[in-house]
Length: 310
Image (cartoon, rainbow, N blue to C red; front, side):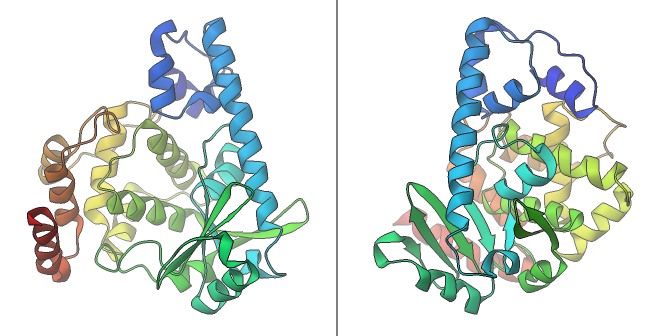
């Protein structure tokens, strides 16, 4: 399967056979829709299995997009659509190829409250100072003021919205992250979850890096790392490249050499088969501590220890 993904990322038509006993792995790694989309060389049973997942992904995504149409005029284009919506529309270009459990939007506080007031209280599924979840017809939309705590990066979320690029899709304007911001959002999302995501997330990363390295405005590895460092995500960037190398799907030039520290982190605090099984809670919290910005580490350690001892 990894070899098939490598060929696809390289725009090659070659599709090596995928083992018949890969069904559970395909399910766990959320790749059924993508394998069907790219014409993976699958057994008859796995072809049907992946086709079903592709159909489910397509139906769910189109239903989610329909809910966005219920937002007040001008809201969607002034939010930043991130993660699943962004990846599907700008990298995969096929709604069935990627599983999207919900839609994530980043908005300023005033716009988030405006969106929230559009729906009845029965539609609200979660709400705090920074985000609100809205469920309509079984579809969840999460609207965030920030997508990750300040302790993980110094990203300015309003700047990311301002830097977003508008696209018209089926007559509806959407705002998506620019390519370099797409990378930083991916990094901070992984840092937030202690890098527990599996192969599907590294297919996302490979597509992001492919655009940044070989797209219309190519960047060097040094430039990418310097950008990550500017928002306090340098360690996350090195760890991400180490994990991408571990999954062995990057088909282009060799990835940059990793520092000894980031490689030790990868070996000790992540597991190759995540999310089944997940790294231990001590591994996850240890990695989150390392990824936390220096001025926030004492408070983070105190909070974690208090929870673990409760």
